[in-house]
Every structure is written in C-alpha cells, then in structure tokens.
Image 1: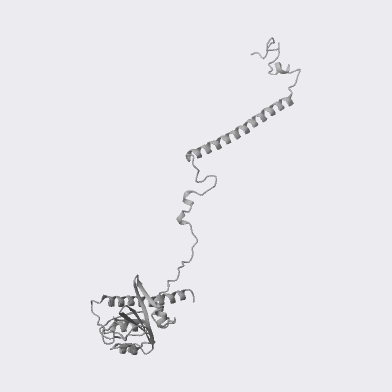
Image 2: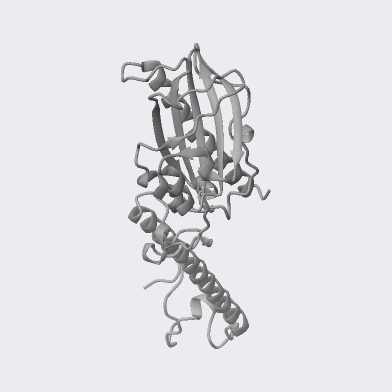
Length: 294
C-alpha cells in the first residue's frame, strides 16, 4: 500500500510506522497531540450541532403532521376543541337546559262586574231619581220614533203607586222606593214604574210572583191626560239587579188595547228596553268609578 508517490513504503532495515509519511520517522518527530485533540473537539461540536438541528427539524415536522391530521380529520371545519377551547359537544348545555330568569306570575285583577253594583243597596250608592234614571225631555229609539217625556213621580210608599195584588207583593219584599215616568207619542202613552229593593233576590221574587193582572197606576200630567184607569191596557214586568220595572201602555183617547194595536206594543217594548239599558248603565258607571279609585 502506498501513502505517497515517489517514496518507498519501508525504510531499509527499519520497522513499519504508520505515522512516518505524515510526520516523518518516529525516531525523529513526536505527534502534535494538542492539535489532534483540537481537531477531535471540532468534529464533536459539529456532530452535536447536527444532532440539535436535526432534532428541531424533526419536532417541527411532527407538529406539522399532527396539525395536518387534525385538519384532515375535521374536513376543514372548526374543531369542537378548537382555538376557543370549547368543551366537547356532550359538555355544552343545550338551549333548553339554560336557566332563564324566572318571574313570579302576575295577572291583572278581573274587571269589575257592573251588575254587582246594582244588585244590592250596599253597593248601589249613586244618587237616583226619575230625572237621573230617565234624563232629558224625550227618548229617541230609532229614526222617526221619538217619545216625549211627561210627568215624573217618586215615593217610598210603594203600595200607593200600584193596584191589585201588586201592593202586597211589594210590601212583603220590602220595597224601598217606587219611581214613575210617562212617555207619549201620538195618542199612545206609557208609564214606566221602577221599584227598588235591598237585594236582587227580592226584586226577582216580585217579578216571578207577579200575577200578570195587577199593574201600576198610570201617571198623567205634563200634556198627557188620564189613561189606563178603566180601559184595557198592556202591562209588562221584568227585573235586573235590585230593580223590578213595569210598563203600562194604552191610548190617551180612552180606547181599549187589542192585539192588533202594534203601536201600543211597540211603545211598551221600546220603553222596557230603554229602562233595562238605563239600569245597566248605572251599574257600569259605578263599576268604572270604583275601578278608578273614585
């Protein structure tokens, strides 16, 4: 084996020395151990640097691979454990599981019943008189049908305003007041009689026990002659709340009423409806005042 050109491998009569070609003869020169050590250290530092760089690159490569795997697994959508660190699906409370603020149930008080205010003397405290219950000078029911208002009357002696068995019926049920008013149109007149009681039950009993033969005494005056005292007339009775109300309708010229006299029946029906409406409005007015704290 040759370590150089133009030189001999072996010295004549000498032993083999691997350092002869580089450093000369072993007998003439000692190896530079300090230089050799420095070269070895340099090689070691390069090796360590390569190992560190390689490890770092490997770590980055693993991180990239993991990220790619996550993205591929999620098909490009945000992960349930993504950047916002949201809990897994089973850990997220559903909308129905959320606790909304609760408030005590509230409800408006029921509206006041107007009838309550005209069903007993304890609540029916508003002033009353024939002119309050039947205000104005006339009553218009529909176009072309107008009833003019005649005389009015009011008494606490209820029996004096009626005839037949009605006087006893009123007295037995403690009638407290009896009001009358007459309306007329052409030759037909109607007297309305309104009896007041302390309770609805007494007013209802008078209406139910009425014998349909007894009636009120007609009220004349204010342009209306005496009527329905000795002639046949039409009479009705109804009740609402603590009020029982009657009508007596007939001719002012002394004729008897027959079933064919539609004007007499219409007058009685119109004034019956009007009386009911006036009593009901009385209850509504007092209920509204009570609701407003008046």
